[in-house]
Length: 164
Image 1 (tube, rainbow, N blue to C red):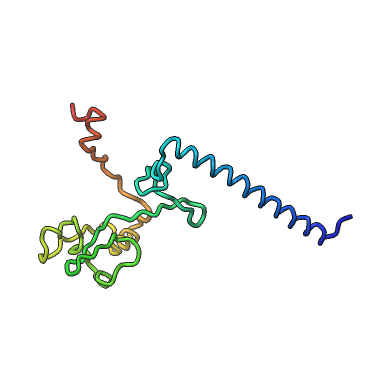
Image 2 (image 1 turned 90 degrees about the vertical axis):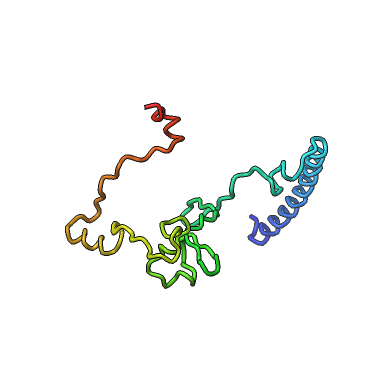
């Protein structure tokens, strides 16, 4: 019967053998790849390693095994003084952190045309006051029926709705 230390020594010996075999195999594979690259005139971009690669955006696994992409959102707010932008996600930057009404900072909003004018009032449908009022009336958790979705010109053409 083998002892624990004898088995550990055998494992170490096998790991060394495996590493030596791996190095030999890798050298052969690299040689084959170099030959193929030279024969076909491939570049790093062709293989997906260059800056012009056609690979999809890299995704990583976040908490819970869900795939999350590392894309940057479209800027929604702009600081008129410095020109810095913010997407509206995450912790707000210092120039907008204490502002209660952010409408004047919207990039493509109603306040973008009238800089310095009184900002347009937003609908009360999502404000705390409206939520509290609807909770008092017993409408908690229900949503109003939404109108039919608008069809863009491209959808109209594809569906034949433009001909109607």
